[in-house]
Image (tube, rainbow, N blue to C red; front, side, top):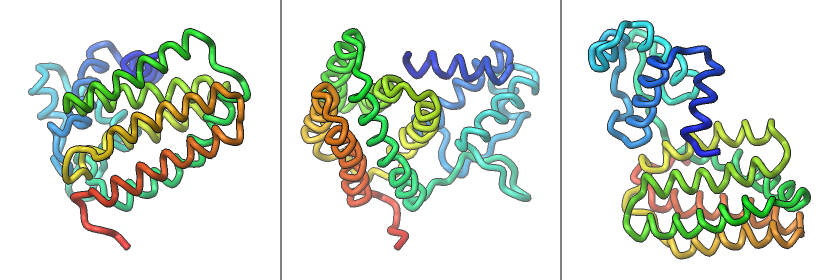
Length: 232
């Protein structure tokens, strides 16, 4: 299941119309790509005018974006694109690391279906090609799919749901904190291969260690390369 499919299911679960869903997906994409900058104000009136829709689809989209944590309601200001900090990034990763480790552990215990193994190997190669071509947006989408595919193979739907929320926020935040293009993509390529092979080996404890370490290593490198001021 790719991110677009997951977003479609999520939107339907929120009982919004197809028109509201279209507005939602467009706004979410604009935030993820950085076209809507942190701190930028969003109003029902402006969104309705931009998309040439009534205020109801705009209201639906803003409600869901706020529930996802992508926008914030600031007193006496209104709704703005959330202004993330380096501390937010740190907190997200320190929560995600043990959960990613658990996801890898459970996937190793359960086993990954052959079709999913093939897809994961394809994703690893696609990630490498994307970052070689400096296509960060698509590379991030493939990285998301890699980790969520493993989470789905964990057999724990609650873990998958939690990681989906965390990984969506991480995907949005990472471009905001990079000072330069992402470093050591060759190392990241090897990391993803190591994660998959550790899961396929069936060594659950080792898979957990490698999955957790991958997240912490990514955190350390990203914070060292951040354009945001340190928080501690």
